[in-house]
Length: 369
Image (cartoon, rainbow, N blue to C red; front, side, top):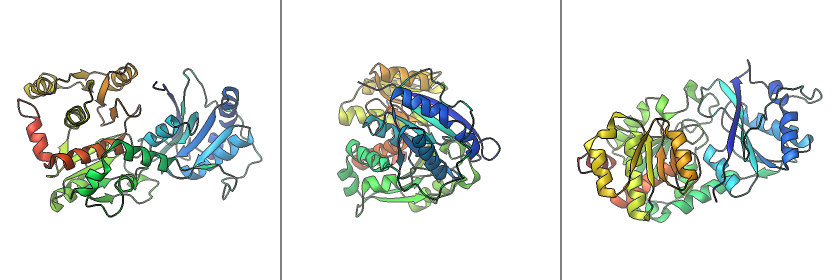
């Protein structure tokens, strides 16, 4: 049975709105909620400015108020938090993050299994606490990143990827997915993964850390000039994916969704709806040809995120993609998972033995893929 979770957010500009004092003013209400529900809470964080220190302070503050809390040992992509919750590491999660928003923002995100909550009530801070303790020696540290990496290895054909000679560029946009794809593929593989923008930069190079808000000029140039097989860019929180083919051209979210849907259907016998953003391609002959050939239905939705959630809850979803490239799989997780989508695309290229630009050209022929 799929677990339904709800997301609650509070965020603000760093220093102006999002301050240590403002975070601490929200401890009491959040601790009361956790204690009343008996929830175990995983405190996680991304790579934003001081996110790790604020997460440690949240762990310390909530624990002092009697809440059952654990602390992530490393920055986590958002899909990794969902995997940790699926595997009962905790009942809910508090993430110090502003998702893929601009670098000057930060916030708190609560992922909880109940609707209608108001977890971030502004109150009085505990005045006796000092800013940022140097460590949390008694912290109950959880390696949720390893849990996520192991789950990804279970969902793709790792040996196929390892034994195929591919070169993949991965732009992690200074976010939480740095090192994830190389860790899944492992050492001494014939497939070479080259990461860029993986340095710890709390300001994300002063750019919005999202592949659909960036030109990806460097990634496109590297892929094109090195004759690599493809390039992928993943948003800071690991939900959205950008794809560059071997000629350095950007693939659209629609193209990526149809390529992966066809592959999941043909290779893994999976079926269901393919939900994509509404566009002029809805009546394109090549899309209708793709439907005829595959036997799958493509739904062009005005609100794709909402339709994806509805279809998944009804066990009708094969794959869905939003306007900004968040790919959700019906049989894995409940949100956009960029590392999983990227690895699935690498597996597709490895198995087909064909360059991605050729697949895109074939896809857009009137008779489909």
